[in-house]
Length: 167
Image 1 (cartoon, rainbow, N blue to C red):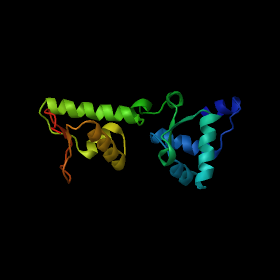
Image 2: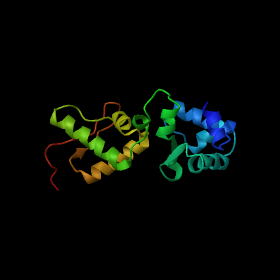
Image 3: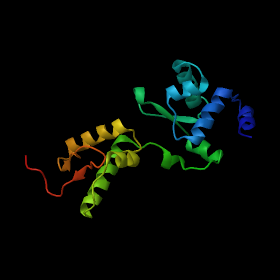
């Protein structure tokens, strides 16, 4: 039904377009390398297809920059295709919003006497990969001297102290 509606609007969809839409219905985002693998073509060709789907068809939205660029299915199309999941909940969040959210959780846990956050919990809260989570916490520690380094290993936790550090 979707393909027929789009053909009536003048959007002739190729198999590659449908493969990318199908991937985005099952995953919250796609990057150039994944699109290239799905299409079995080069990354520049995949980037061109993604750009077309963003600018002309308006099926997807771009996020991130440089090598971290990714695309998500537009929420109106997600809703139109009525698939399970929640497009806003499953989408990555803005860098500053991620820092605010992580800091808020750290402060709440500290206030209630609970343990801090592990890197895995930070990744889940911010919807980031391991290295992005580490970078986010380095920035937060530079901005907030009350955040203490977690130590090492699986049980390491970032905590925020209630007493300010002396300089």
